[in-house]
Amino acid sequence: MKPYRPAILAICAVLASCGGGGGGTPAAPLAPAYGAQPVSCSTADQRSWLKAYMGDQYFWNENLRAPDESATTLDAYFRSLLFTPTDRFSYSQSTAKFTQFFTEGRRTGYGYSLAFADAAQTVMQVRFTEPLSPVGLAGLQRGDTIVSIDGFTPAQIATGSLANVDTEGVARVLVISDAGGAQRTFMVTSADYPLTPVLAVKILTAPNGARVGYLAYQEFIASSAKALGTAFDAFRAAGVTELVVDLRYNGGGSVTTARNLASLMGGANLDGQVFTGLRFNANNSASNANYLFTSSTATLPAAPLEGLSRVFVIASSATASASELLINSLKPFRTVVTIGSTTFGKPYGFVPREACGTTYSAVNFDSVNAPGGGGYRGGLPATCAASDDLGKALGDPAERRLAAALGYIATGACPAVAASADALRSGGASGPFFSSKEARVNPKISEAAFGEVSPPRMVAD
Image (cartoon, rainbow, N blue to C red):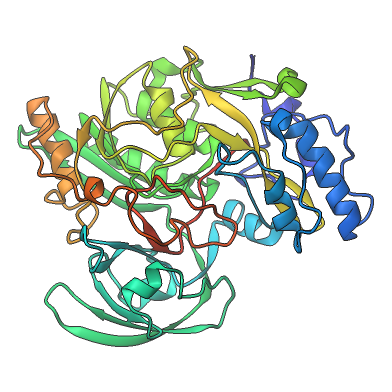
């Protein structure tokens, strides 16, 4: 495989926007043998173009299904082509929404994610809130219990009765109770809000006295660079000797940003080593490319943290795509201890393709680490099993998963943990794991979430 070199890549010439936003470009100069764009934006021309594109660029192009000519939308036509059930990842969305997320680092909606807190699925709690979103500004917090939203009960929310909202100005009424049992009712209005990819940064002390850096990271997007740099500067100044990166809700994003975070974690002696290799279908094997670790502060937002022989990653079945890539790619070079539950299982990624205002994220490549290890379609198993602890804030040393990481740091072994609620509800909630229309249902999810949760993304940029 050739190394990744942005200067030689030309795909942006035929894309309306490129994932990641910070000057990066997709890793493969795809040959537009099928035509750079549809002849016109008529339904017939878009379908013809899409079928040709998938036949050439789709990772499973040899298993492409016959299209459903009776499909009533382009998205339905696109989905009819997919190699299911193997492909539970590909989706389409408006180019405006794609650009909003990857380039602008923003989302439109309310800013909450919910999950059941009990195996019987009777108690629904807030999993996290985006700090600058409408609900974040209204004071909704992790651990608050949902009584109803717009009159819908938790059971109704879980079965999809509450409509997904991705436009501004839609009012929604929430009835919640806090940890003390006090109930309140408030109204929020959907809005365009900035994402906060770095949710928490802490300097903690493990039971054995070790200085521990803790980072809760939510989105692999270029706009996170400044906050990541600030976090690693703080870790260095505090003299941390252990690092816990919390990716339990991180559904992925930019390959370049994942490489940069891994480089910050791995230290300067990984400079020039292979972070990941992207492998395309047989038609496009000339596009196979390697991304390399770097220690350059011209590329990274801070100097790498040195001297870590191991890193801890908090993970769950919501940990997907670029998050799994980071774990898999660090393993050949560092001991990676994962705390939580098995990850989503997505070693694949996209070179998003725009046509007539729609961006298609069809699987274009799979990924491997330096020795060639990949193929983790069943997810990456946890070193230490520990269920989520919605009653405590992210970064609280007493939170079950973080406490397990701190215990391992002190003892070198997984702490004894009661039977995981995640395992009890394996195959779990009856509602979709992702709320957005383009996301596919994952029947293996054990930590089902409801609200504004992005589909698992890994974008070559």
